[in-house]
Amino acid sequence: MTAGLTVRGLDVFYGASQILFGVDLEVARGTTVALLGRNGAGKSTTFKAIAGVAPPRAGSVELNGQTISGMAPHRIARFGIGYVPEDRQIFPEHSVEDNLKIAVKPGPDGKVHWTLDRVYQVFPALQSMRGRMGGRLSGGEQQMLTIARALMGNPDVVLLDEPSEGLAPIIVAQIAKLIGELRAEGVTILLAEQNMHFCIAVAESVAIIDKGQIVYRGTVAELKRDQEITRRYLTV
Image (cartoon, rainbow, N blue to C red):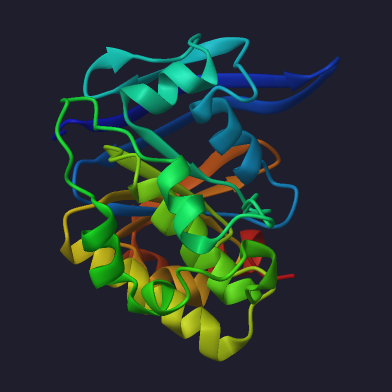
């Protein structure tokens, strides 16, 4: 596999309760992989484990061949993981531009691929709102801001947790278009979603998680043809 993100055998517990059971994932550099599953299936916990927020009890996470599991979250971020949590976590009393500047750091190779000017080129709506307080943005605008903020850290891999959740259909379409543009820019993305139709529009391959275990892997085209898998694991 081309260098990228490799997850092997992750077990994660919250207290005495085991949430993830031997989770395996691979995301090659420059690709977009969707982690699909119902609410509570383990998607967010997988992302927290990769980012170091919920350290795994067993298993490993490698980024470009280097083990990052067991590191503190800030070190994992410096090694190249950009994490966009499902609750966005912007700074509401700071301007859009301040939210972006807070996240500035070079990539793990020491280079700066994403500057403020480049982010504004990809996110022109944010440039027009650069002085607006984060708390005054709509849900869709906040989602754009959190994705842009992650890019300001020049990550090798971006984790997008439920980017379409709670957004109007027209905003979901805009976020899908944005992810497509990032993919065209060569950004490596692992995307967690319940919305299968959203993922089919932006991802190349998918993994399905159910009750903390990966139960399916395949391309988007293969998933489209497998109605039984869709019915069993994705319909509500």
